[in-house]
Image 1 (cartoon, rainbow, N blue to C red):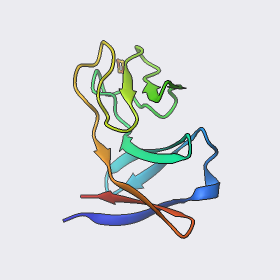
Image 2 (image 1 turned 90 degrees about the vertical axis):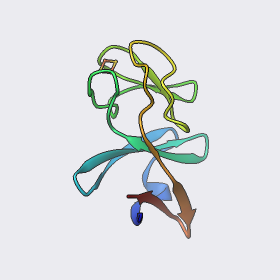
Image 3 (image 1 turned 180 degrees about the vertical axis):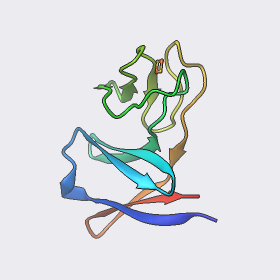
Length: 103
Ligand code: FES
């Protein structure tokens, strides 16, 4: 069963921009890009690096440690050295608030 959390106000995160949110014992990365919001684990699947400090390039976030890129919408690993996707979470926006469904 999933839990819906209020992650941010829409006007709180610039576009492009990022925010770290806590959900239980996890850190999630909320991304605002081209008018859309996305949420993924703040974990690079190559070696566990945090993605928060990575650059947003071509609809992907680049891990600051060794450069792997992940699609912000699907979490797919787009370049080496990562080969596995990072997990994504459904995001909805209602009345100026960004919600994330976590399980
Ligand atoms: S930990 Fe992210 S590319 Fe190595």
